[in-house]
Image 1 (cartoon, rainbow, N blue to C red):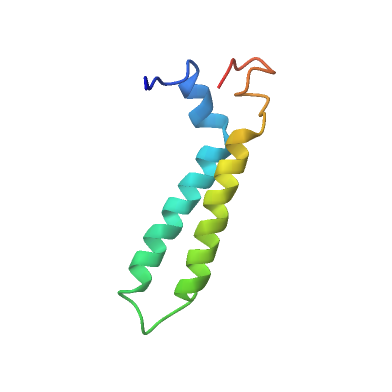
Image 2 (cartoon, rainbow, N blue to C red):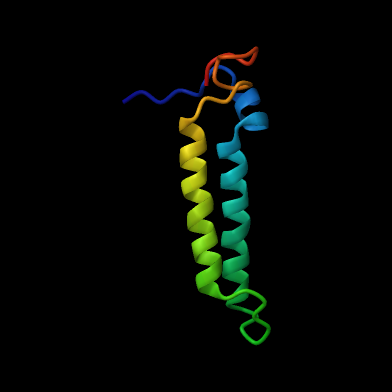
Length: 80
């Protein structure tokens, strides 16, 4: 299997919703990890953060499969 970056990687990183959802999921992962250190002041429960993270990750997968005008080649961005 040969792995290659897409030709318009800058455009994908700037405009793709999947990248945004994955960035939010990463922030939630960090929040979930830090909540364990501050167990006495629980603003959001750990299961809630885990469910939100799962939803964001699934949204990122779905967003990557949907044509996005700026990154999918249907507009001026080229193919993703």
